[in-house]
Length: 251
Image (cartoon, rainbow, N blue to C red; front, side, top):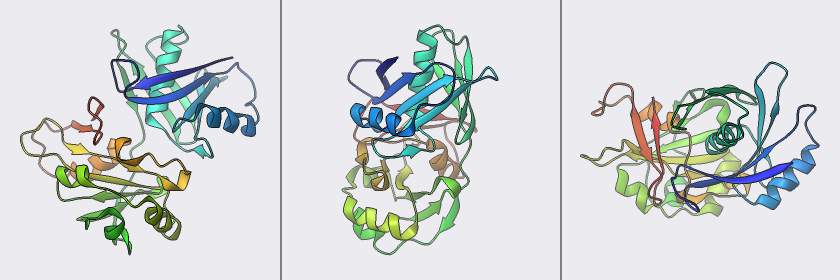
């Protein structure tokens, strides 16, 4: 068994979003406690475990150091890169996961495109204490269905950059509101090629990623995409706050 650390969203070592990747042999899943111990030893936000499935796909699971996750973008990207680098896939792969079938397509130059399920968003009331926990009053907040993240829209990009969250207070809100984490976003400043910024705060997993980690731009895109799109009708681009060089495109 080989365990790797792969940096996603970067073209240089020791940058981007690191994820652990463990490719397993075909057969039953190992004991969950063992996979949690591996993830805790790796100490990254997520460690991915993948094994060949009987239907020609690959089974994929993600673990934080303390819990199993329902979905992780950067660890899926890292897993696809590992499979392609080892010659185990050619052109793409379909993953069986807790979030359904996930599709990854690998281009001739090695670029990877992920096709993830869109998360439905519904407008919600701003939870009590959220403005104080973020240090700013959100414009709107949105629930994300079974993903259980709260998408919070701030006035502008500068507001997202300036967020200094009280993670203890956010953890209390998460428990009270039965949410997994908090996504903070805003439309990018005028004239920038980027469309939105999205840090992810996940105190419920006891591994708060803080404002330097972000994922799932399709949630932000579902809200911000309703506004006029200066960069074309189908594409939104986002960049993680306070961490240059990590960009995602949402179609």
